[in-house]
Image 1 (tube, rainbow, N blue to C red):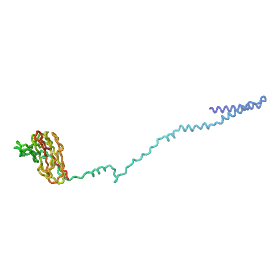
Image 2: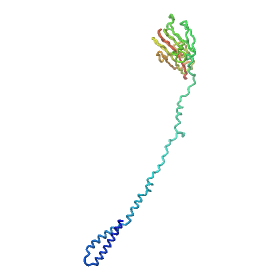
Image 3: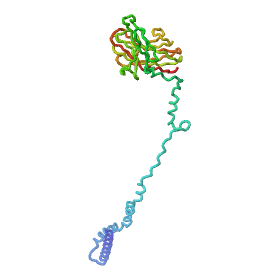
Image 4: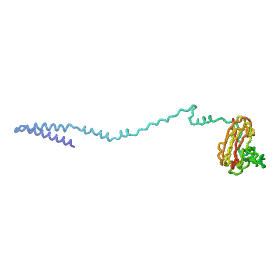
Length: 302
């Protein structure tokens, strides 16, 4: 609108100038001094107003169209498709094409020791545990017999055999459960006011070169003289507790009033082996009564 008004004003101004020129040409009274001044002023004004054409006005239209068009934005802003993930790395198969999961049992199996040779089952319980009854043993030191567990032989060494009455240990069957380590009975050696050595022994058949494990339990009542316990082993199979062929092993503990275990392992040198269970009471004082029980004998093989 503003452009059209300017064009009309320029046209009217042009017409006005022409009319003035015509009138000035016809008139003789006054020189046309002011006319040239107005003419150059109006012409450049009209020229400046006419020079702008509609093309600059049309130029911004594509810009508006570009700004309002969402097509390039939609294309460029669309979230790109994520590339496929690379496959997980695969471990090279072991030799033979198997995964290293199951080979663990193989070294374990190879590390197992070789099977031992066939050996006899351990000897325990029954007469080894003093549970197979007792027999009467006539003591050479007194006028009554002692009681010895079946499967065992008596061992009595009197320090004062000529005393009156004879002073020698006695062998008895003990059924007091407080004095039994396992089962219902134990072998008792009575030392109360008696002095000497006493116990039991037995001989077993063995295989030369095999290892044998012997275990036994013992308990004794307190005594002012003290008491010594020992496990004897005779590799010749003899029955003499005083023989030099007997190897004596002190009990691993000798505290009174509780059950004490001892254990020894030997390699058989012959086909017979004798086991001795012995207690020593050095003085004829009160106490010292000893119980033996729950003996075991195991063949460990060569």
